Length: 540
Image 1 (spheres, rainbow, N blue to C red):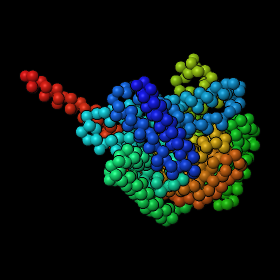
Image 2: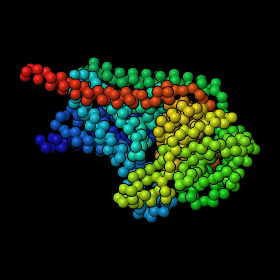
Image 3: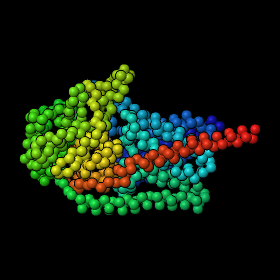
Image 4: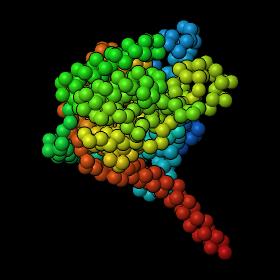
């Protein structure tokens, strides 16, 4: 008997490991494996139903299975941490560097997995509930709804990092992603999981040939309908972009790595960026974007740096967005300054809204300083930076530009806020030198593709060491500067003012998912009250 239990549990672990690794690889390497994402979660569905339908398996044990699954899944997505070695730019020795990298690579997935385990419990509770017993057809939709809600929770709190959201696996297919402009990328997540879930049931009921074929047919229909809708949306957005006002935009890639960024001559860094800015302008650019902290220090009106940039902007009647540090009293900000065609510096300053934990601030510093002091040392700054709170649109005679800095771009609500406040184009400045030439830089670039589709805006992305790119409102990358190279790129982009349904309604699809999940305990409670009352009446 024990051997049989062990074998069943081993098989479940195998299913979970297979699904976690294959799905993680699909998300991490969409160019090669993204298409497989529509089937890689079949083993997950098989394992979850096996766990949930066996009432002898306690919820706490199911939680551990969830912890196992998501730890593996996120370890694949966060494997770029290995490319951070050595962390000499932080002043850490080799041993400390290895320790920090291992803690990051294993620890951050663990934080995500803690909530992933709750997703497994939620699923099991739903499948075992009276509502699902009364309406077993709900099993078809349980995993898509619950997984989408879980993915949304990864945007909450400092520990929530939606780095490996499922739609990233579709960023090389695009037509499967266009419905994100209607209901958000979480809707695409639901579709991916729904197709996998339907295919699982098709296999499960293979002996009932007619039912199996119906389920497989519905699964294929969901995929094809989403693909067809994506094609229609793609063509409509392309038509709008063609008719819209255009602006020629340049991005500069200075290629200063994590060590050089803090040790190079400030004047030399300025001259490098001005040299490529001049080349952008020579190719017709009227808006030039520099990377995050292209100048990793504070610049102020009237100093040498601002005078040089202002002169370039004025002579060429161009707008130049410069990544730098800014200080207000004791507070420091990761910022974007806007140099206007008049040569003046805009009064509007963009402050990064979502700071990187352990990079720009230390969460729960009083605890971390005692428990894991070496993590506090990972931050380049002795004091925590302050996050911005507003979208701060740069209103210029050339157009209205919204900014995002690095980590901002993986949180959809920040791009939505920028568009709601009038951004006609998104200027994204990022560092990414931490990623070297790993999959991390491409995953980060793919996040920008999601934002472009969700809000129907062109994105110009300037990365310190790459990838710098131009992304259309359909999520298509039309030009890129390869990583670890110095240079510039210029492209003609459309200024758009139309709104997607998603940018108007926000994450209403996710809220509906949470409402559907909450219906399960509510139904159980109502049924219990009715049963209790019936028993009381009978006894009376």
